[in-house]
Image (cartoon, rainbow, N blue to C red):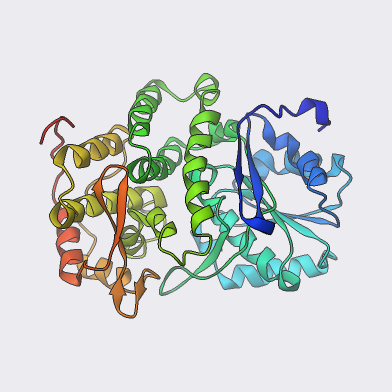
Length: 386
């Protein structure tokens, strides 16, 4: 893509991380700028384009062409779509394919896809020749507003999600909202759980924007809707970027705020057959559980909890556990999560909307009570109720 065809005025979010600093480019049509941005970042060597079986037929050739137009030699590596690809077995296959394709320490990886591809490709890049550069090109809501930024890479094990991983920041991120048009409606909605999370921990006013977006989804998502998304995506990325800058490797506790809704969410996700609940759907359930504990333990005002629940409901995200899920399984998986340290859980609660805290006072009984709460129907109220 020629330099003069790239609109520099479109939203760009910068992360200031010393030598690991980078930009996130949010632009309708930005997929065609991947090669230009790679050349501008002075990436050299061959490019390994890692994508999945759903995304490659839609956008793989465009991304490859953009890189080739910038004079890069490109090898393409397609993994099966779905969470099951986040495995050490798949990592081994990709590494072997890259060796056979002639990649060396001068090469770089381009991750084209949703959160699964981003996590997997980022992990491969972090260990190949002890670490090579990589670029994130997220094509799902969740990846565009959350997982593509921050440098966390990981694969799963039988014991839980993301238990094997590294911190490996991308060279840059390219978020093209137009790619969201190809998402099934359920996948589109589940990614918005991360937007609700960001609003809950940092920007209460965004809850209103998300309810307006929910109204548009009722009519049907269209190109006119997409045209409004770059600013909303950039707003979410600003929230995450500022938190990551203060705690890049999650050592001071600030970055843990981004786990709001994820603690029990991951426990639920590990307790159900693959694909029965999507990641954003379990995050929605996890947010409801966190709100329950926040009201009980930190005095979160009812109106604040209700506003968040109303937003999740407007986006048609689940708020009640399916009846066939066993609470003891959820508790068991939750207690093997990375957020347990020395047998003690670190749980993100809210004092009020926009004011999170990291609590070590949540007991296993509290977790059990929260799981039981998720099995009850939600009674939605006006958010002004106290």
